Amino acid sequence: MKHFSAILLLFVCLFSTPQLFAQTATTNNNNWETYEDEEGNFSIDFPAKPERETSEEDNEDLGKMTIIEWSATNQETENENIYYNLTCKISKNGTIFSEPEISTAFIEGMMKGFKKKKNIELISQKQLTQNNYPAVEYTVYYKDDKIYGTNRVCLVENKIVIMMAFAEKKTIKSAQQFFDSFTILNPEETAEQPTCEDRYFLAFPSEPESEMQQLDSDVGLLDVCLKTLDQTDNTTFKAAYVAIYTDYPIITASLTDKELDDFYTKAITGAAKNVDGTILIQRDCTIEKMPGKEFIVELNNKGLYFKYRMLRVKNSSYMYCVGVDTKKDLNNPKVTDFLASFKLLDAAKNRKTEETICEDAYTLAFPGTPKDMQMNLPSAIGELKMCMKMVELSQTTAYAGYYIDYPESYKNLSEEEKENVYSLGINGIVGKLEAEIVTQTDCTIEGYKAKEFIAKAQEGKMWVKYKLVLVDNRMYMYGQFAEAQTDFDTKESTTFFNSFKIVKK
Image 1 (cartoon, rainbow, N blue to C red):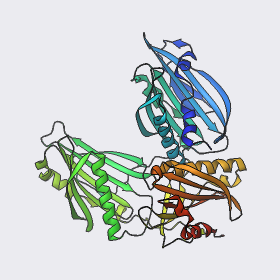
Image 2 (image 1 turned 90 degrees about the horizontal axis):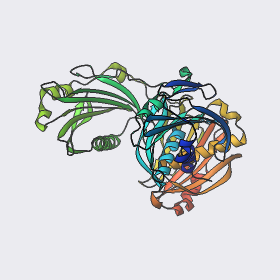
Image 3 (image 1 turned 180 degrees about the vertical axis):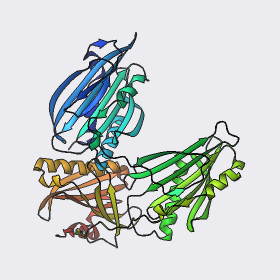
Image 4 (image 1 turned 120 degrees about the vertical axis):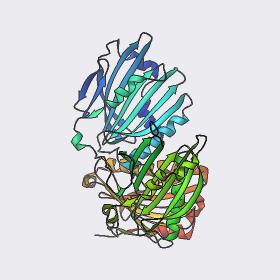
């Protein structure tokens, strides 16, 4: 089986750059116009009249796909031509590329593949959303042809949309207009972007800007509400105010004292790392009659200081801070009064976060008492429910079992479509761990066709064994993390993998 990253590269590096500039006639008409594609269900702006071509493709791993391609070349200056291309690949087997697990593996595999190409230099990359769907934008330099390419890949339900702009200069100003003009024709069916809620009060000096983001993490996508106020211009006291709340999709019982302390330690370290800073002071404090943390971070080589406060309430964390130019300003009343003004609103205090939605859908002989966790994964086809049980025996050894419910339509998949679901599921796990598959075999679980694989990560310092079985529209997965491949031969491991049973409804 091919590596997923190698397959993904085929979607982006469709042509060599000399061929690109020869495909369409050059024009110097800089009147941008919008072109609609009913089959692809999108519109896109071009500065010159594009050509449209369609074809069919039978991909070894992704099945049959329809290919729609729009392309045009425009003479932007006397000495510079810009080539624009949009390629839309449509899955005929119903694969939803914008599902969180698939989209994450897709983007990570693509970026890893670029880094391995000796004749391609990856200059920059950033993840973003387009029309509320996952996307990645990156700039590369083709060393052999001395051409720069600015690219954006957007995953829209069952479509992979690749937008490319090529030129001899590093900065392609018109590329942003080209990319940002991409629009889905029926926005009412796109995924809804989450919005910030009024959870707390903070005495900002004036109205802050609000923005809702979704960030990837070890526990899935996190909903993050960010409020910022920059008062560094034309004020007697220059400061930057920031407040963030983050909802963790894993819903558990109340954290133990040690778990809460570990959470704060990791969050404080992460906050300092995000701003390239050094932690100067860290101390306990009380916020809303609950244990919280206060800490000060100095930004390395920038002469800026931030004073933070942080509180964990149920499955949400609240972090707010003030940034100033000098250390002594951290004790200014405008800083201390802002930090002391934090109040949780009733909406936050009364949020229901511990509703049980998981079923006893299977049994597994865990080597210890598992911890129950549940997660709602947002996707273009609605929220996907994932329920997990995990036992961590050490920092290097763990056992996990979980299931994910897909839409009802998955009950009617063909054998070929099921193989595709397995392929994407396995590569999603492997891609997340940046691992390499060592063995992969077919097997039978509870009378159903299933998959088993062993992979290694961290240059062989971590090994993973997993089994997957798709029953109707529910995927069951269970696996072991270990230090060595031989750990899978132990009695404990064998008992675990042989004990799986589906609980009949």
